[in-house]
Image 1 (cartoon, rainbow, N blue to C red):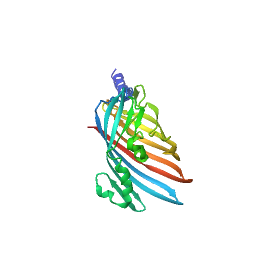
Image 2: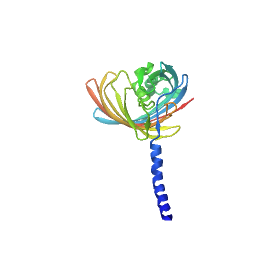
Image 3: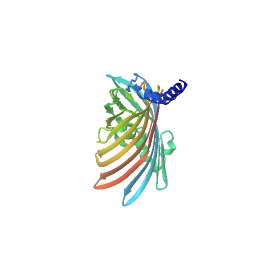
Image 4: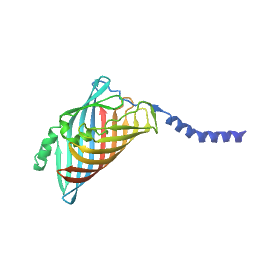
Length: 279
């Protein structure tokens, strides 16, 4: 009898971890946007890129770092959510040929450099400007109003490329579940992101999603181009609101831009991070 009890105890101890894993694996959550009218968020986007390109038979490398702070105010609109986003501050550092170009919207002295002046004129128009993205409860984009941002595709792509907003399925999900979504960040280009989301962790206050995106485009801002790339990383979602609290993505892209009969091949690699919190 004692031997039987010991055997039963051993069997129970063996089965216990399996029971725990199974119990957690079966935990499901319904992800959707549940944002309140007038609620506001602060988001910090950090970008670190290396861009290699060929021109006049030479290969050149540009290193670029960008940090952008945005303020987002939610406006409910026929069961959708209009996210009015204002670019509050921006800092950009570019390095090429041993030279460094620095633009900082909060430091006027950085705009006095003749090499920065033209860039500053363009970026100064964006700082303080607002664009809006209207999404439904699943994160599907209903409407864009890019305002001044429509003329600066680099900044717009980084702010609207799917690092800040997730697309959710119409059913509950558990750890290990995956679903696909297609995102087009700009109206005037055919750039698209085919994204696969996978649930990695489910906790009471956070759901972690794995993200894999395939980027393609053949035209950008009326310019023939061929763009292929991938974005991989993770997003942490607040299950109560659907809001992205943070994300960290790795980007690898190749492109060929055709302008004036000339082709300019380039590769881009880097990371994009977003941290966001409610005010």
